[in-house]
Length: 250
Ligand code: 13P
Image 1 (cartoon, rainbow, N blue to C red):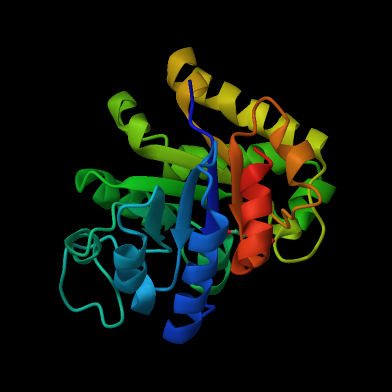
Image 2 (cartoon, rainbow, N blue to C red):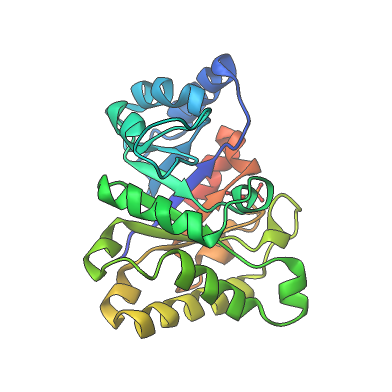
């Protein structure tokens, strides 16, 4: 059975003191074991601190990005080895903000995927169409191409280290959510694309998260859809109470 996952992407929010406060609140609100695996991705400067703070609790701390090179002259970048050396085993790759503002294309992402998998990390691979793609009714082909070009080169046995996050760009931080039906339709399409490229059992086992304006008020109906295995949460993950409410909606 595939895993249910609720992940909080804190993006470029929370300094060290604020990170400490939010972690303390999360620890207080998550005293009942959730049915979902919980992942939290703070910013790089607070990763080690967060990792130490959550140690022993069933909360995984993830990075929001990493570079594909092993090391070298890449000023400002972070390697897989650096992450692993502080205990981080999970990394978000291909977030639409990385694609849109930092020029990450499918080719670069494929390299990042390879490096993360080589280091036996778990990747949360993000993708999703823009508003113009959906309006033009080519959202399925855009998503399929992102998957084919960035991810579908991996070996069948590497899929156990992959979580997918479908995040339609038009729904991120906009307050506009894909309807549960739109999310289900796309998640089912993604699963069928994986079945076509690999096989039914890989398609059936991979967790596919939905991201884009998930809130306590809409989480339950989105998570109730059969092909939605949880969520990647931005804004609402910055508040412990709403993040807990979303995690409980699984
Ligand atoms: P919001 O939940 O703020 O729309 O962000 C979604 C997201 O980008 C998570 O990675």
